[in-house]
Length: 459
Image (cartoon, rainbow, N blue to C red; front, side, top):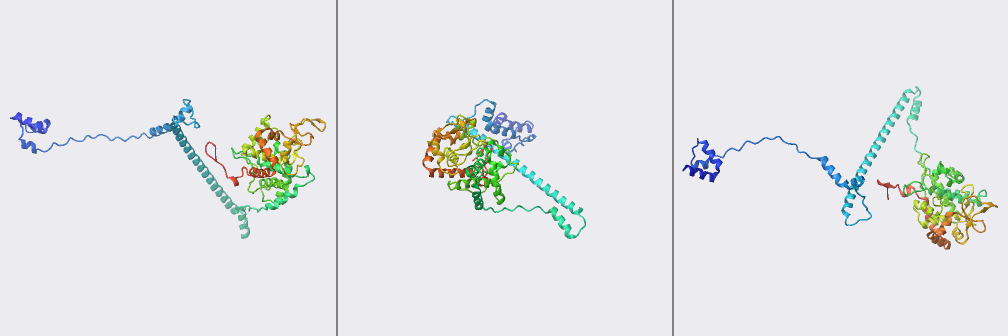
């Protein structure tokens, strides 16, 4: 019977519970009702374990993310992988290129943040410097007031005012540009200069002042008038232009509100119109730079021989004018200004005029260039020619530079030359547009400042 009860308890409550009840009653089993109504056994005491601080491997996560985006860049830098070719995207490398682009975007964002921080730090330094200077001025003023002798009240106040008062800002002088145009026209005709006119020289001044522009660095151009200072005034290409600058100095004194940059540009423009050329759109707004402004390197202006490509003067012209942002048609149009004036042996080494009407603006330069027979100059005034290479017509009266001859040697240039030789109105229109563009190169007021975005200029 006892054995039967134990087996029944095991089946109902489990072996461990039956043993507990039997042992608690001295080894004697309880009745079924007692077993059923018995209270449950107390739960085991909780095990107290020390709490562990959760470890979040932030550095490891950031390193992993960086390596995910920068992995390709790291492998390329170490030489284990070739750089991606963004110009040759295929279905096989599209995912890799996307990852590379994302990595580049992250690097650009970090660069922008650093630039902003550096800019803010510089602004803070300038603000601190400004506050310190203001405090120093205030202290100087107080010391001056203390040391001033005891005079009449009015004299003391006057002395203090001289120390504290800052000079008034220079008021902007209104400029009479129509008056300047008239003054320029009045100085053009003169018997004491070549062919009886200073016009060609003033046009050369305006052209050389603007022809230093570089679209890749946004430097040079019509703004600044840096030819007032060395080294630009000493460039071989600018020889003789000191005469033009001196001629315009009287007008500058008469109209002090005009900048040198605007005066030189307007002088060349007015000289073209007075010579019978097209009406040209011109507007003021060019600033003058101080002598401390960064100077430009020599070699930015065209060389008559095509110095860097003596066998290919056409390529030299393209290198110079493409740098400024001109195309082939504009190169030919601007070259048409050689209809005016001539060359001087004491400046460029070349001698002679381009046309037989050197003070009249027309399309004769292209007509003469196409119709005359040109050969290298070998003699001059009964002696062998020892100057730089130039070409002359059968009469020996007219001359052309190697860069002029390139306009008929090069097929693309020649087609434009033929158009202008047959259509003066077309030439006038294209020249006026190209000249306006030339005279506005690098002028912040007209085009704004170029923004640079990490690796280069942003259009």
